[in-house]
Image (cartoon, rainbow, N blue to C red):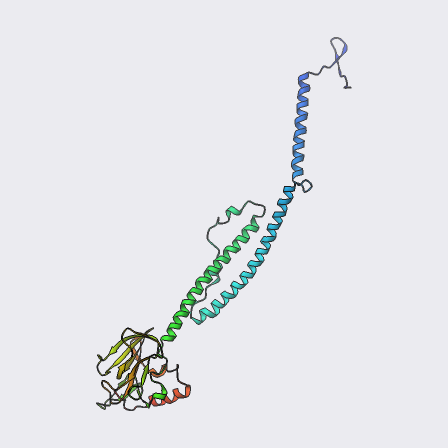
Length: 325
């Protein structure tokens, strides 16, 4: 039972009941209900953000987030392993392959540079685990860049290796006549007595004495540029262009086994010993040209003779005797 309230009426000198208006009562009730609703909503929000009030969906989502964190951790460990392998390859590339081919090392500022763009990872920001995702993505981008740089570097090394192989095959590195077919090494490179004029003049090659018909071998890979007798004094002769500035000339042949334009390899038979042209006896006159200048062929016989044989040939070649052409 609600309490009855009174007020004192001074005019009539009596106590009278206080009558509450229905409008005020209704307003109080509405205010109370609104306050109760607001309090309930706030309490609900607080409960939602505490671990004591989780729905099955929330628990599933939390488990998935933990699994993703674990997967990112495993991914970073694998990237550590990949990074170790890449660093080992980079070390060999800089300190072995590039040193061998006389190429400068690729600096880390190029190898490990990130990708351009300040806002490259902007779409990954604003999430609970954004930093984890951004850091991992950056690592993947850097590894991808390192792999791209290393791949290009190995392409360069491969081309250099192929060029090196071609270069080594092109060098005139063997004797044009085999030792078992030689009578003697008649004359070497340098000033010699001309057999016809008896004057001392420059002999620009080496003379190998052998029987007519003895095989003559290409001393390096190349293309036959000439196989004719148009050059004065050489008789039947062959010129091979090896590339890299090298040319070789084989003179006084009895006959050819190669034609102009033909590609030959080191050791291929290209002709036979003779005495055509300005020649005193059957022999091969052999010259080596580097960058259009004659050089001593003796410096190139490392491909098919021993050190002892080289010493003997060098002693004979250095004698100032009479040449055969």
